[in-house]
Amino acid sequence: MPPELYISAPLASSANPSPTAFQEFKYNPSRFIADRLYAHRPGIASTPPTHSSTAAAIPPSGIPDGDILLHAGDLTNKGTFAELQAQLDWINTITYLNGNSVTITARKRSVILFGSPLTPECGIFAFQYLPIRDVGKDRIPDGTDIVLTHGPPKGHLDLGGKGCQWFLQELCRVKPRVVVFEHIHQGRGQEALAWDLIQKGYDFPGVLEVVIMALAFGWSWAGSIFGRRRAERTLLFNAAVGDKEEPVKSYTFEFACLGL
Image (cartoon, rainbow, N blue to C red; front, side, top):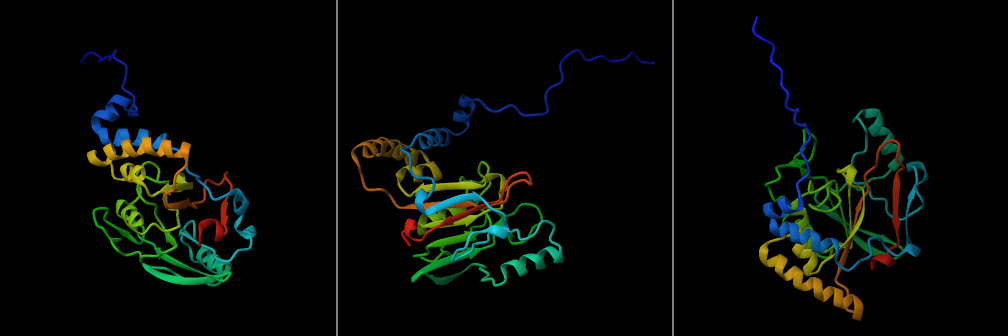
């Protein structure tokens, strides 16, 4: 019999170590600088004013009264007919949006909503497209107030970049007041985007964009001290349900605090 082979060297860990800051910079300098600048930009409100919005742990049966209920998909856990029927009975009446817009009037205000179920390909689920395809170009009408989709824009509440780049570009063009989505459950939460040069440098970090971002960064800090006109902003809500142990969140807000 051949002699037994003994290996004295330690076995390598199967988990990949996190890259160092230098490695991140070497891999993509523009992205590295943009991320650092964005993390230290002058603060913008991440939620609407507290007197007119709440985010509370509320089960579906206890959702507070309101005028418009937005549902971003994933009606069921396993896709059974019984689950689907139970959800349809609960919602009762539905306006289904599949790449189209509707105008809803509530409290004497008209709100334009655009909705789409499309998401970049992941698995064998419905309403998917290849990530290289720009399926959203010029799809959202100008003047849209609320955008309702299943998946997030790239780089925002999407677990480190799993969202759609084309969707982000379309939001940058239209600049709606509110965007509601889910799909990436671990990214649930809320975020505010200010459509200024800092935001552009973070979302589209080319060399020139990051240089302009750095200049705008200094100007923005000066403006936060001496006062300046605020850029247009969009509120993002990833309304995904968390794990079973975590509460369901219900985001409510008034039209007035969103400028609608």
